[in-house]
Length: 125
Image (cartoon, rainbow, N blue to C red; front, side, top):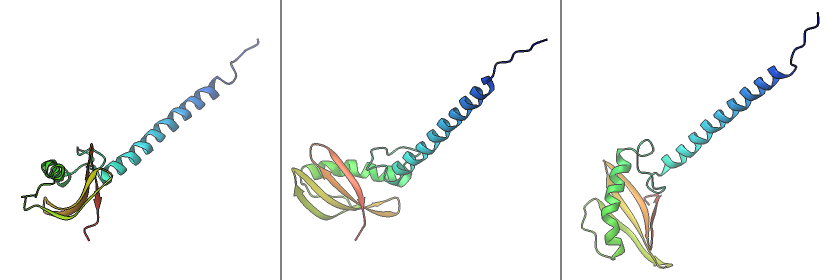
């Protein structure tokens, strides 16, 4: 009696499972990397939402949304939680360095207001 078996079918299954495992692992590592970058400055990256932003980040975003009209109009700020450290104008944008008191913390942020509003965290020095 002669028995014929398919050779290699088990190998293809193992290769497929290994490839799927590597894809899933790569996706998890990539998601972790992107998430950690977004969590480093969720306001600057435009994602002030959970799980990237905490309560202080959301409070900072709300305070900045109140400050932007004053920066656009080059008006004085009448908020005890905001202190203007520097003002500059360059490249058609207004750059303000602000010291913000939010949720018991002091944070500094450079806000650039032109056609778009961008910001980044800076050291408070």
